[in-house]
Image (cartoon, rainbow, N blue to C red; front, top):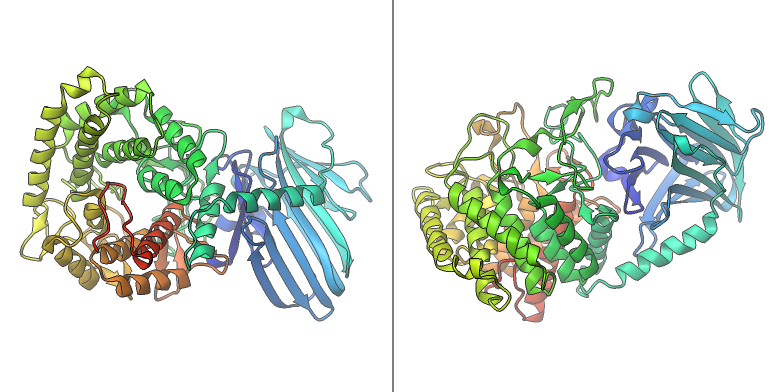
Length: 617
């Protein structure tokens, strides 16, 4: 069984990722891409589904774990009665192939060590064909199954278990010794001797790469360590070849332990584009923002009616959802799913998110002189103009038949129209005639949408913007209303909305997305509080001038991060456990935004939000 999520560290090379537990076990990894089949899947099952463990073979008295400063190099120090040993785990970025490197270093005494490698391809289902150069004292093995192969180079002799397709090593590490262990992925049809990796050289290169990248971060406030760790996590979740940014590194980690709310998040959501793009630009990472914008353009090219809410990291459209019955799920939370059926839903809000992202990028100088921007904008806005009064599945991707007029969906339809108007007004010298001719019509549609939302989404009886039109249900997504610029945060309707959410939609100060007992999502069971929604609450309080209260919420969120500074999608206050897929990009984007807003408040300056609205002072 996997460890608590808080006990996992992340390593990656910006094409794929791995999760390693505090006890030295690599329990999750997909190769050659993050949305490929897993070859280590213990996280969602047990030892039989694949892991790679390196740790002392005697009792461990203490474990200390951290990242080397401003890097994605994971350091774990084990203290035993016989001494201390340090492990460094990392993946070199920018390589032509995928290397997982683990260096074992003796710090004190003489510590007995055990290496246990059980590769299981196809999400833990396929045992590999093992080949050793010498069956008795080999330092190299090749493990193959179907299209995939791994080359394993060990610093100590391997002991094979042919029946279980398992490789072990037992050795003693002495103070001052450093021993490398490496796995290299390659397509099995290219079977050939893989040259040994120079682990020490790759370590130095990897440290230099990450520290140079982190050094570009423009945030210099009191929360720099947390902000930089969040940016590094976003970079790790980036698929470098295309610029796409994953929602998370995993699939099927439950929103409720033992429940069925288990989804595959190894894809790129258009919804995440708005805030991710702005977070990158706030941090000074314009190259990554540019790549993300380009991914967005390619993904949404074509007919607007065929736009999806999510795509594969390379732009793949078909994300068919299937279950894997041989995996019992994290802590017994099944089913395990790969693919995500929500890709085929109609969600009106994505059009506003795309146009907001393109507008925000353009205001920062990204996209000037690109005709496709105007072509795409016209196509998307024309579609919204004709379809904004439709019901949809909404931001939370409900799986019931109760399609509603969700307030967030209508808000983002308004955003689509608003950003199109701003595009035409602010960049009129670039705008083609077909845009200029539509501006008056778009302005009228924008005002109609605004009146519709303010009339039907605000429930004066409960004093709040509600989940959907003519409803009594609360929903945390309405906290985005001032950030998108529909009404300011200090508007009495938003002030009372925030108060209603604080009173009725929080658990121990953490915000729920919505009340699951209403049955709106069509799913059994419950879920934990949603971290991004809690950041949104802090942002609203900041914009209302309630800085101390917002800062208290922010620091409370910092305290529930993992010891390595990572966050999942949700948090269960009673269990004190992170839940949902891990680490979650959106949670880290929320941290970045709130930290920048707090720093702007502290420095007495205004910070523009994605909509062009400003903090209220």
